[in-house]
Image 1 (cartoon, rainbow, N blue to C red):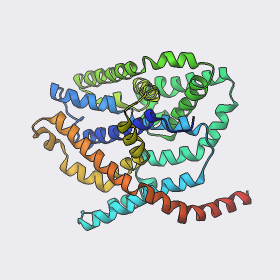
Image 2: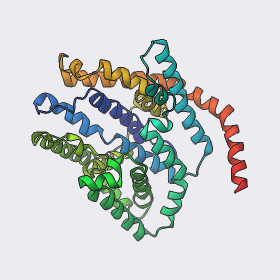
Image 3: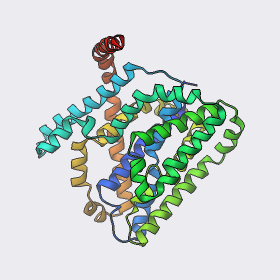
Image 4: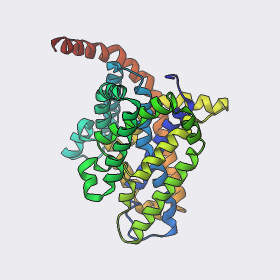
Length: 356
């Protein structure tokens, strides 16, 4: 089961493209319009169908890590990749003479823990996942059901109340929400994919694609409604929104069961999927974002020949550039990490472990 799943590899790439696309919307402040018009409807569609990206990525991680043990090598490689792009993009920023103040400089050089909210939480999650695994496997089947229901009720349904939401999982921007998603992914695999409810899972998977569309359209409706009454649309775009959660789970199940027979497409996905995480690291780098906010602003899109098409074109171009750059450096980064940094980290880890 730990062998590569072509559908989930496709979801990795799709999730990273969604991240890029919704950031084009966000950094261009296209969701901050105080009025609703049909020109903005496609922008709302991009956002609502793409907001599942982070949830999907964590679901993929949880689905595979539930059957694995902690590997220091992987953690070291992850941190090495983060720091590589931090240094590379800082050098590029200096070469092109990017205006910097002290705050930008410090954030640019120390993305952990000052930037990359997702990276910070994901590193925490990777450190914690062996303990989460032990907890999941210690539960009976009935307890697994009960805990899944409680987690969704407390951190998704109940957390939709505005004031309570911030007190619980910060709209999904937290290690707690990532842990909930991790549990749900492990729960789906153990109970439905490999456990007693295989037949139910097969039936659910037949409607998962439609479910993703329906729940995403509900999010669009909520965005339009909020805009119409003069409220910000962000309330509908919380990662822990029940509709966003259900849409993410449906898309995850749909791609897991997806059977791609075209050999060329299979090779393309298999070739680029391992480098997908680098797309996030590059596109969300503070220096990259700075220029994106300057040049791909609201005026740029409003003055273009067609705003939604231009948003889509910019998203595709940024995604492809980041993907090809990430693919070029991916193996080199991991080889360097495995050869030079991991042995040192392993010695420190073993020494610390023995002292305990």
